[in-house]
Image (cartoon, rainbow, N blue to C red; front, side):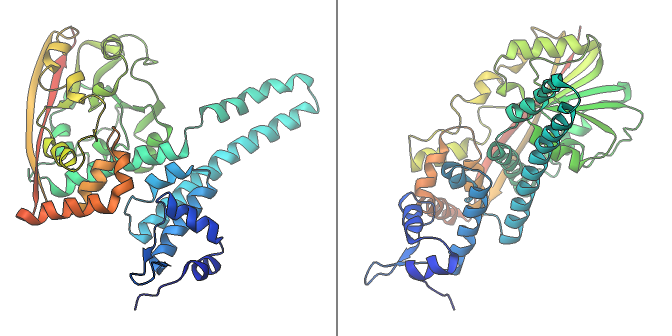
Length: 385
């Protein structure tokens, strides 16, 4: 039997004020059902779970706007607790480092008046700390996209397996992956990569931490911006950029850096997708709200199947293209909505009508029993001259 609570009883049981609940309702953060007869707000036990998440994220320093995104991840309660514990652990680790730095400087000051120089380390920690919300969103968004493709792809060869098998390891002793994310490419490796130097890099500390946890000691991890690669000229036998180049602020600078650190006759593996890739997702969103866009500029315009060869031939002597075709048959609204909310446009405005949008997607699925999504990606294999 579902228990219902008035605002007063819910506030007392949860240990929050009625004013707080009314405010959360007003901004759409925690919206209770309303009694049809008297329009009183009625909360349920499920609202306790949601409120718990809100309060944990708030205690970690997240803004209410950030929390609005975080609580709509649709994780099951056990998985949700795991996420919260991970975030709290990250916060503890961060403040422990700050505390240790302050403590070390304090001890040095007793013997050396110039020890304030060591505060530079503390300042560095405070200034370089990524937003915890951004770290979570980046990692969560990546996982959402990977899980959608892994679960619903109809091609018997999954994307990461296909990409991995197209890498020629026979001539590789030193390898760099830029934008490695959580290390997914290397999780199911079938080749012996021992006695090779493999460097995994990403611009996000949080992503690299996930990669470290997912992988073993066969890899070296560095925070690196692809537009400024801190390695000497002609260092790597191969470089991988899996769905990375279209995110660069300066594509020419990024390609110049890749060419610089790649040995002569070394191979650059770069992936992207075509204008048809996931187009049904965009059409679905536009049908619901024409003002929503999932990317400020279509990423394939910057670097895609249609223009990738032309762009790469400005830097590499031989460019070969391999096409990966697939489609998704999705019979559940949840992964579609999660995928859309993981994109890079203004899709967060859908949160204001989350339930309505969710129902819209569910009704679309009911028309045929599933929604078919086109996948069309490619791998450019480039030889350095």
